Image 1 (cartoon, rainbow, N blue to C red):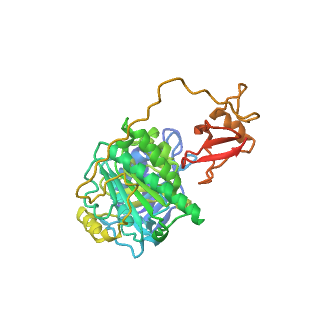
Image 2: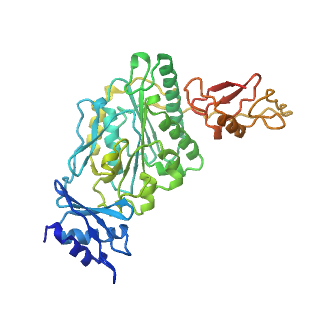
Image 3: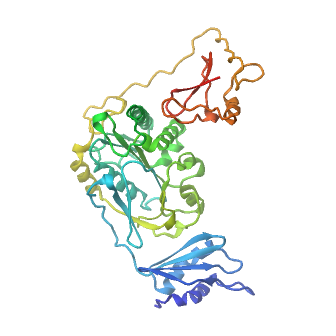
Length: 456
């Protein structure tokens, strides 16, 4: 088999992606070699697109005698053909124990051997792909790195399938298992309550960001691992609340010492759209359509449809790493035995902290099932009279009543209040006017449920 990149135009022609009748063929720019990989920028033939090249990648790889050929979109009708002459990875790359996880631990490796590292706190991960594409392998790598972090780092998990997090009990502080998501909601409520308390303590100590736990001050960081996010978002009873709580956790991030990693298959735009914007580290494994690529990564600059299955290969979009684009990486692997042994070895690192007393400990012998709180009922009788807004209130309408949507006019004046506790600007579209207004306008902060005050 030929192994010269000079034969690429003829091979592309033979693969049916050459010039259409009466039009010029594709133009290939000067190739760049990077280790065992050759990158060839190109402009497709007239009447053809960059995406159509993906249909011929296997034939092109066979013609060149290469291991794999992938095509990346560069925008404006241009693309780049990545030719991997040899398999850049062995069949399995084992996850290895980091020297100090707070300085970073490795979860994947790029084609040119560059390690992809992350930290237990401060980053959120969205992992998407088809079944058995390898997304759970990367999720286990993130969990393993968080479990090795000592000094007060809390690790919890949500496992709708019920068996993916087996063996993690000795190290995880809590695990919500099963398709009944009542436990998952309970766990997320407890984590959010813990995050709010942490944010309040940080405010008292004058700390802006929490990258490491400080148990002496009562500051514990949290890592939340979520498998099968698809099951959660499709649940009509508990799904909306779960998404709201996950969105709150991803919004807090280092302001409360929280990190979230979620894996999902066959994602839809309405399922991950609300939380994707806060999850700035995204990995797209093998998918069936480019629409799913856009849902996971937020763009279609790469095409993971032709990645081999069961290889743990993914295109990675990393926060603050715009220079390298979306590198192709291979996730590191932990077997079930490795995960159980790791949990046993790090069991002493589990903080003795109850998450609000609302969830069962993962290793509890006799878990306590808490009763569901009774719904609040409005007392019978006449509806209480509506209270008038203060005279001259800038958010009142002609009748003197104050409404949430009127606050936008106040915001345009530059007088928008922020929360006294977390200093977060009030979300005007979801703001609620406090009914007990007297001399001031008070708006309930959706982030920490405190009251943001501003004089009327």
